[in-house]
Image 1 (tube, rainbow, N blue to C red):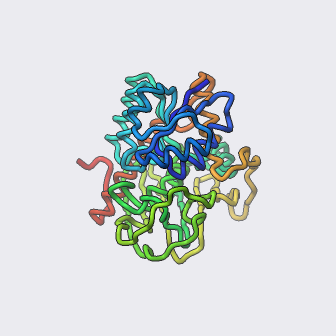
Image 2 (cartoon, rainbow, N blue to C red):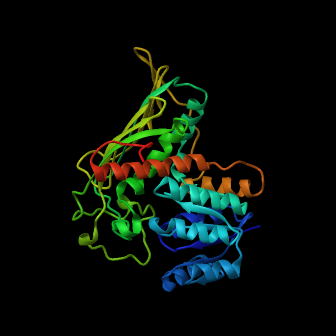
Image 3 (tube, rainbow, N blue to C red):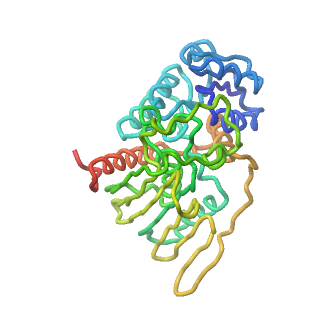
Length: 358
C-alpha cells in the first residue's frame, strides 16, 4: 500500500488529487493533508474521511512518513515544498508547472535523483482520446518531418477568481502558466520534445473586471470551498498571451492563450509535417491535395471532471511498484520550464530571446 500525503487543500486537491487516489484505493491510502489554513485542512480531511490533518507540512512529513506526496500549493511555492518532501524521503507528484526556469527544474530533479526518489510533474492534459491517438500516430512517424505547429487555448470569460491565480507573487504568471502550460506540454509531447532555440512572447491584460462562471474559470466541478474574495486591483498577471517558439531542428510553433478574449473558445492543436498534418481535437489527418481521414480514437477511460489525474495516478502506482516508466519524463518537464522562463523574459524585454543567451 502506497501511503499518500497531500500539501495544500484547495480546489485541485479536493476535485482532482483525492478522487484520483481514491479511484485506485487498492494501491493508495491517503493518511493526511496539510494546509496553512487549518480550517481548509480540517474540512478537507472531514469531507473525504482522511484520518489526519496538519497546518504545518513539515510536521506532517515528519510524523506521517509518506511514500508519496502531492504538492498542490500555489505555483511560486512548488520548489520549496517539493524539495521539502523529497528530502523527507518521499516520492513527489507536483502540480503543473513544476518550475518556472531551467535552474529550478534541474535542482528539483537532481534532488530527487540524489534521494533515489521519483519526481513527476502533473501534466494531466495529455490524456484525452484525441491526443493519445495523435501521440500513437506521431510516434509512428505518420507526420514525417514536423516543421510547424500551433496551439490555441481561449476562454471567453474565464479568469480564475476563486484563488490567487491573478497574483504574480503567488502564481508567478497568469493565463500562460495556468492553462497555457497544459497546451505547451501537450504539443511538445506530440512533437517529440524538441529542443527550444528561441521564444518571442507577448503578455497583455484587458479584462480583469469581467468574470464568468466558476466552471468557465477552471473549477470544473462548479464548486470551490473556502473561496477567496477576488479583488481586480490585485491582478498583476496576463489574461492574454501569444507568441512564437523556434526549435533547434527548425520547427516553429505559434500560440495564443487567454483567460478572457472576445473570440471563440478553443483548446486546439495543429501539427504539420512533410507527410501529413493533424488537427486536434477534431482528430483529422490531412495529406496531399485532398487526402483526409480520421484518427482512430478510443473512448475516454475515466469519466471524471479531472480525468487526466486518473491517468497520472494509474501510472504512478505502476511506477512505484516497478511495473512502468513515468508517463511524464524529467527531460520534458525541464524543457517546459525553460520555455516558460524564456517566454516571460521575452515579454518583459519586448524582443525575441534565445536559449543560449547568457
